[in-house]
Image 1 (cartoon, rainbow, N blue to C red):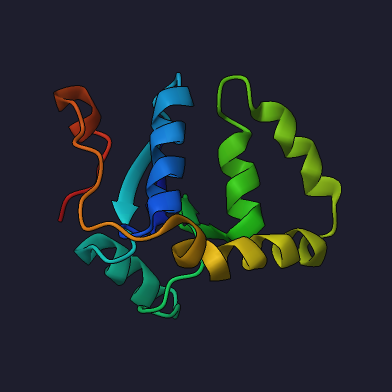
Image 2: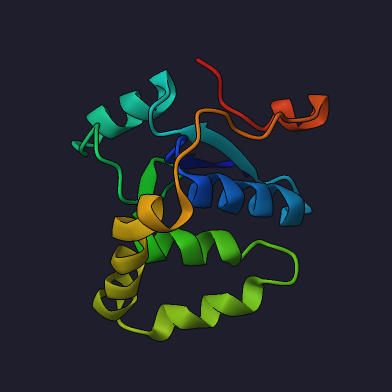
Length: 131
């Protein structure tokens, strides 16, 4: 199974998180696309989501979208050494999303923005959705 993670491509924190997922995704389950990409924009429009001012990571799995803390926990569930975080799914979503939103709203101020992402290896290039 392949899941697609949509992320804010100009956010330093988001790019660091994607690098972390790449490094810990032993099964190569995940593919990646910036929310700003053609693919990301299409998914957002098809699912009636905002196409600017991104404040969430989105996991697309079999046509279903997971957002904010739900997406983060679903991703962590499959990362080598980090699946234990999935236990936090028992914390009520409004509580989880409250903390997620605090970080998301302040991510540029705390971590900054970038114009360039990590240059993927030839093997890693296959992990990115290009349209």
